[in-house]
Length: 404
Image (cartoon, rainbow, N blue to C red; front, side):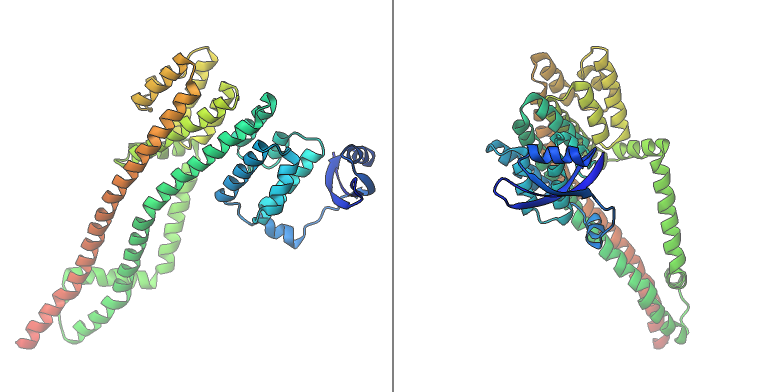
């Protein structure tokens, strides 16, 4: 297939132009005629990199942009618009330039005869496997509008959960960063000036003061080595976690952490349930759904459980049993999934599980936040207290010397 740039006129004589794939110019001309266009010029598209397109490649597509695209598309399809008209209308309204160009490319592919799912699959970095497979299932079943509505709800709930977690951690992170900056300023600039005064007064520096003073001098002289060392250590840890063994150890450690591990597990259970429910209700085959869920859960330990579930389902068994045996899923969630399988309402029960654990995550995050903040304040208070003590102790000695 080659890419051609074309110019044509529509049924009203209005000039149109664009880019489309075809095996030859003749095939493209025939496609344009079927679309009601009268081709006036067809030539091979010139491969080149424009500064504008290069800039667009670096423009980030936010999750909010994709949510709005999903909601707009589902609403327009529900209102009776065709896919092509919907995509063209949305492309004309989207503010994000990169997303606008991608939607335009998708609409051109659909216009050229590709299915909507095939056009989406050409942009895997933007549209997830979950989205593409659900759309493909909706096209096959003729229920694309229903599938798009479910996907819109799913993406909204996932984003809401993500923002809750980020919002809960925002204040503690700011508090920690502010505390570290203040401590570094004290030990690198304030303490050395006091030490000069103490030495001129002939005061012997106590051990805490010497420790803080030497630490400040070391950081001031070799700060670049410290930063380089931290960067190397973090890079080494990241590279190790990218290996299969390292990734499993990291994910296992996260799940075993006190308080935090419980919150992460609830988030994963919610994501597993919501994703599987969306896929099953959209008509995606169960085995294929489990393959997608395995890549979505974001934890290798749980992903291995999903793999064992898939193997059991492939043998004709149910989902609940391998989940129960694994010990990684809460028993109430497993029981609800088992009831859903027995009653033929698996999608409904999975959504109930997801709703329950979304609520549980909200309470757990609130509890985690109330625990993190005082712990951080205590740690920072002890650190600042030690630094202040190292500064006050020689002051007391200096006052005694002056009185004597």
